[in-house]
Amino acid sequence: MILVTGGAGFIGANFILDWLAASQEPVLNLDKLTYAGNLETLASLAGDARHTFVQGDIGDSALLGRLLTQHQPRAVINFAAESHVDRSIHGPAEFIQTNIVGSFNLLEAVRSYWNGLEGDAKSAFRFLHVSTDEVYGSLGPGEAAFSETHRYEPNSPYSASKAASDHLVRAWHHTYGLPVITTNCSNNYGPFHFPEKLIPLMIVNALAGKPLPVYGDGMQVRDWLYVKDHCSAIREVLARGRQGQTYNVGGWNEKPNIEIVQTVCALLNELRPKADGSRYEAQISYVKDRPGHDRRYAIDARKLEKELGWKPAETFESGIRKTVEWYLANPDWVAHVQSGAYRDWVQTQYAAQEAA
Ligand code: NAD
Ligand code: TYD
Image (cartoon, rainbow, N blue to C red):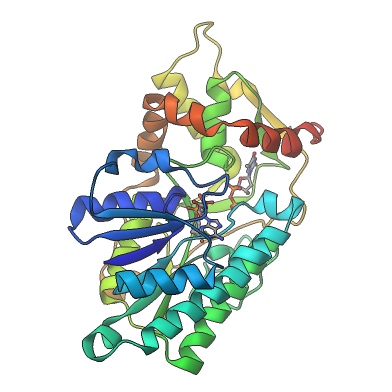
C-alpha cells in the first residue's frame, strides 16, 4: 500500500481517485482537514476498503510512527501543505509549521521506518515529495523556462517554505540515503479545486454575479497543467523515477492571468449564457496587486518527457473546458466548501482591496 499525505486537498484527492481507478493497491490517506481539506471530494470512495482515511498532522511524530509500523507502506507521497500564496502573505506562521516543521517531522518518521526495512522492501521504498515551480522565483519576459538546475529564488512566504522543505528532502537523501524524489509542478487546475485560487474563484464568482478580481495589470504569466496530468506524472515518477532526482512537471501552457479570466468568461457565455444577455467579461474588476507578486512562471518539463516518456493528455483548451463543465455540474460541492471559514477569508482578502 501507499501512504498519501494531504489526500483530502485538491491534488491529493484527485491523485487518490485516479490511483484507485487504475489500481487495486490500497491507499492510506493522512490529512489534517484544514479549511482546504474536504472529504466530500472522496465521497465516491465511501465503503471502498482500498481507501483508509486518518485525520492527523504530518507534524505528529507519534501518529506517523504508529501508522507506518502498522500499515508498512511501500511509498509515501507528500502532498500535505499550506498552499495559498495570499494566505501566506496574511499569515505565514502555518506555512512555516506545516511546510517546514511538518515536512521535517515526516522525513524523520519515514527515515526511522525505512531504516527498519530490509531487502527488497528497503531498496524499493520511495518518499515522493510534491513541490512547486514557485521555488524558482520569477522569470523575465524572454528568459528560458525553469529547468531542474535553475537556482532557488523563492519570493513569497509560501514558496520560501516549500523551498525549505525541498532542501530538507534533498539533504535527507544526501546525508541519510533516504530514497526520495521531488517533483516541481506548475499551476494546476481542474475538478475539486478550492475556490480561493484563480480559476475556480473566477468560475464561482462569475456564476454568482460577483466581480472577477484581477490583481494589478493581469499580465502575470502562469504555466497551467490539468490536475489529472500532474497525477499521471506523479505515478510515472513513483514507478520509474530515479531516487535523489527532481523532476519538473508542466504542460507548456504559459498564459497571462487576464487571458485565463477571459477564457473562463467565454466558456460560461457559451455553456451558461446570462438571462439578461450580458457577458461575463463585464464582471472583470482590476484590483490592487498582490505584494511581491511573481511576474512569470514557466516550466521546462523535458527531463520528465525524455526520461520517463510522460506527456500531458490535455491541452489547455480541453482541460479548461472540462473544468468549467465540472463546476457547472457540481454546484453542491461548491456550495458545501463555501463555509463560514471560506466567507471569512474572502472578506479579509478582497474587502480591503480597493479597485485599482
Ligand atoms: P490544498 O491546499 O488544496 O490541499 C492541501 C491538503 O493538505 C489539505 O487537504 C489539508 O487539509 C492538508 N494539510 C494541510 N496541513 C496539513 C498537515 N499539517 N498535516 C496533514 N495534512 C495537512 O493543496 P493542493 O493544491 O492540493 O497542493 C498539494 C501539494 O501540491 C502542495 O504541497 C502544493 O505545494 C503542491 N503544488 C500545488 C500546485 C497547485 O497549483 N495547486 C502546484 C504545484 C505544487
Ligand atoms: P493563484 O491561483 O493564487 O496561484 P499562484 O499565486 O500560486 O500562482 O493565482 C494565480 C494567478 O492569478 C496569480 O498571478 C495571482 C492571480 N490572481 C488574481 O489575479 N486574482 C485572484 O483573485 C487570485 C486568487 C489570483
